[in-house]
Length: 400
Image (cartoon, rainbow, N blue to C red; front, side, top):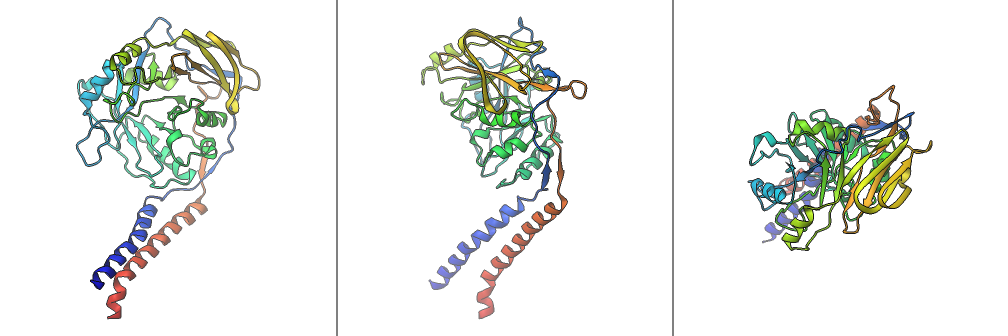
C-alpha cells in the first residue's frame, strides 16, 4: 500500500512539469519590435460604401457558426444541414460553418461552400477565423501572454489565407489596450462580442491606425437555442451569395453589422416574424468631407471617432457629420427602440497618392537577440522539467 501511495504521489508531482513542458513547447515565437502607433492621416477620406447601390438588396450573413462534428470535441448538437435550415428560416442568405481547426463541407450546395475554420485552442480563447486557407495550421500558443506571440499568429495565418478575422476580443482573456494598439494583420474584427455595445477594443485599434472592418457574428454553438441564434449578423451588398462574389464587398467594407435582441423570448413564431422585418440602412456614404447615414426607421444615431470619442448624435432617421482636421476616422452606431443596434464600418483618413486605402500591416521587425533569449529560456525550462520528472522515478531505483 505504501508503494502505491508513493508512486501515486510521484505521478501527481510529475504532472506540473509535464504541463509546463506542454505550455513551453506551444510557446515558441519570434519577439518583435513594434512601430509607434499613429492615427490615420492624409488628405483623402476612405469611403467603404463607395460602391453602394441603394436600389440593391442587402444580403444577410453570419460567418461564425459551429455544427456537430463526428469526433470527441463536439461543440454543437446539430449537424450542418439542421443548422443551415435553422438560419434560412430566420432570413439568412449567407452562412459559413467555422468549426475549430477543420473545414466543414456545405450540406446542401457545394457552390455555396465557404472555406473557413476557427483557429485556436488557447486557454485565453485567442481565436481567429481563417478564410480560404491554402492549408490547415494547427500550431497555437496555449498561453499567448506576449503581443509578439499574437502578432506571429496573424502573420503566419494570413500568409496562407485570403484574410483573417480577430474573433471576440471582448471575451478573449488578456485583451489589453496595449495589444490593440500594436497588433495588425487582421482585416476584420468581431467588435461586438460581449454584453456591451461601445466597441472599445475596435476604437482602440482604429485610434492607433490599424484599420479593420466590424464583422460581428453569432458564434452559434446550438442553433436550436433561441438565445444563441440570430443575435448578430452582417448585411452585405454583393451580386450573389457565393464567396467569390461577396468577397470584394467584404474587403471593401460595403456592409454593416447588426446586434439583435432575442425577439419572442422563446416564442419562435415571434422571432421569425421580427427577423423578417428588421430596420436597416437606406443610404450611407461620403460627400466631399461630409459623412452621412440614412435609416429605414427612427433611432438614436451616434458618430464615434478618435480615442473612443462621441463626436455627434441625433434622434431620427439620419445624421451627417463633417470631418474636422483633427478627425482621423468616423463610424456610426444606431440604437433602435426595439433593441436592434446597427454598426457601420469606419470612414478614415489616408493618402490616396501612396495607398488605395487606410488598411496596412504596421511594420514590426524581429528583435533577434530577444528572440534567441526567449526561446532559449523555453528550451532550458523544458530540459529542466524533463530532468526533474526523470529524477522522480529514478530516485528510488538508485537508492535501492
